Image 1: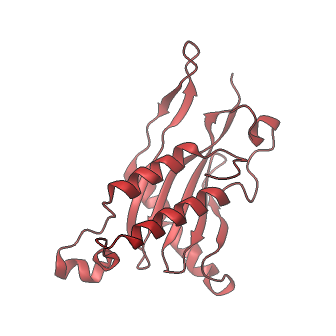
Image 2 (image 1 turned 30 degrees about the vertical axis):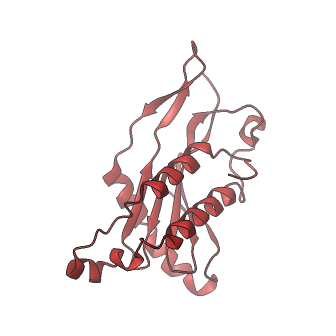
Length: 186
């Protein structure tokens, strides 16, 4: 049996009105012994993860008075011994949630998981900072209108409730695939 390390299972961006703006899923992987390349192992259900992300909203609301906006909310909750959810709140009220699969990837040489330390408090900070930077770049795009994602206005304007930017989606995918415990920056 090979050693397993934490990996990102899903990344969710939830709007200030608690609507899902973006959900990216990442399958757990194993290394092919012949080629030493990662091979997807487990398919994840988008609807299931949408419900899991939605379950974090009450925790954000409960911690809101004690936390200042724009900071790490830490562990929101652990669903079981394998899946844990971590949160970050932006100053726009947008919530970033990273779902971590504690056994989702083979151990990378030189990572903190190789030493048996597992996931520590600041391990997700580089991923959250990279996601925040990606979202800020999205907001700086003059053709992006964040109010189109407001559920109250989307009915009137026929706007999409999801972030459809290919550049943003590609950056989120890059962050999710690049992260491992102990990475200094993404």
